[in-house]
Picture 1 (cartoon, helix red, strand yellow):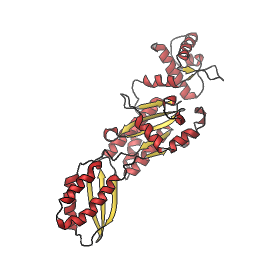
Picture 2 (spheres, helix red, strand yellow):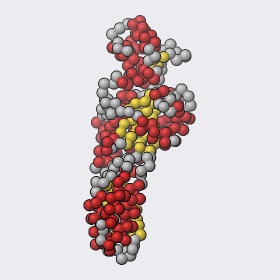
Picture 3 (cartoon, rainbow, N blue to C red):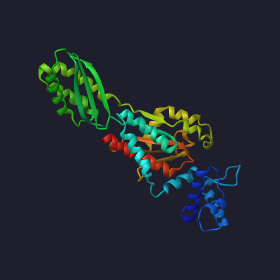
Picture 4 (tube, helix red, strand yellow):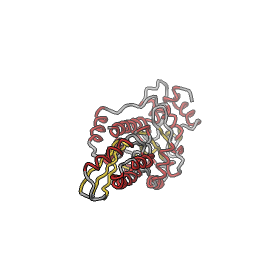
Length: 337
């Protein structure tokens, strides 16, 4: 559809319906929007929009509501995503900067996103497979206990206490750390076992027994978090939007409970030039989500992990897209630090 005025009529219908949840008529459009034409002309434009499948008439009303196709055209024609307000940006920054560790960051992020959008928020944990070793630390807690810490470039911190031989000294531990760190710093976690094996073989014979215990623990820590995980928040928001879903919210709740479904959905979403992906209603490949929309983006190194929201198709798309993108940017910044 290339008629600019009809695009304006569609935009007005979407905005009014999102705001009021009521079908929109031609008189309301003339009264609320400066379209510069008569009600009769608007009715003709609405008839064309309906023929093109962009709006539809609920059987109980003479007004019109957007279809999935109509929402899609509206979203595609959003020229740029409006930024969040300064107070909103400050709130995001303050909340995330107060986090104590990566788990706390992720928990704060998913709750924040749900609050900003009034939708269900979904955040995938940083993917460790593509991350590299930033630092390792060994701390002698007791004669036979060592705390081993592995810090990755995606911000994750894994630690474990291991038992070792009672004769290990602080100097031995410092030498093992220096040799291993020089060998594995910057190495991808997925390649860490092989590099650790080489580093172990190059340790002085007197340190190899201690080193073997430490290397085994580091290999195990590198494997932690390889399995993708997601966090959810704001599920109660669905209950407040039950009138917006054509069927029961049961299938949507079931999809949310199946982490595999959500992870696959996020991984399959393709991002546009704005760095955002939006799937609307029937565009979702999973039947349980055919009455919902998903707005998502990537974050972290190479945008490898995903976050987004899920809600009804009757959604304030510009504001939601802005919130999703802003939270992703702040989250990426926090993890880099």
